[in-house]
Amino acid sequence: MKLHEYFRSTASYRVRIALNLKGLAYESVAHHLRKGEQNAPDYRRLNPQGLLPTLETGGDVLTQSLAICEYLDELKPAPPLLPAELTLRARVRAFSQVIACDIHPVQNLKILARLRALGLAEEQVNHWARITIDEGLSACSTLLGRRENRFCFGDRPGLAELCLVPQLVNARRFGVDLRWPDLLDIEARCLELDAFRRARPEEQPDAE
Image (cartoon, rainbow, N blue to C red):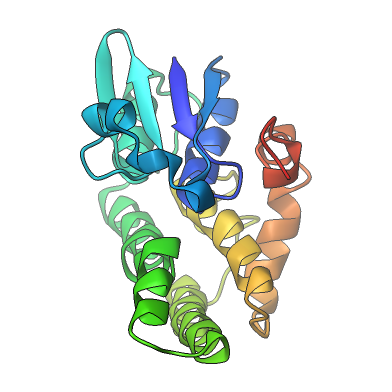
């Protein structure tokens, strides 16, 4: 497997964790987002959106981090990223999509660059990101409800944690007030695990 990624890309971070949890070896191919390397013609032929990550596997090309993670879960079912019970699976997906669909796309590099191009000052741009992250993580904490498990929805990490841990890195980068002890407790439990530690941005070959 070949993972096209960038060390600071939270979507790439999700897939790295999934690959590590599944025990799947992969080759990392870095594309520097801030230098625009994701827009190179060769990469655009792989991923027409020019987004990261992209996973090449067995002659196939897969895009979109959650789709990749679910592919990996079906490819190698153990350990599972989604619970067996139907309603709980839907809850895990909903929590994950709050982050992957509602927080991350609205505060990512492309959107913030467009805000700057419209004339917003840097503090206004950062304020936009902070509000977006704060609202989303607050919703995530509420979705957990009265938590009785070690992790978000069970006693082992899965799709929800793959999304949560990278997003908390973004939250710190933008100076968000991390006022959710439940989310921070889950993060700490995850970072005790080798699969999560090895996936951290600072551990990647292209880290700066």
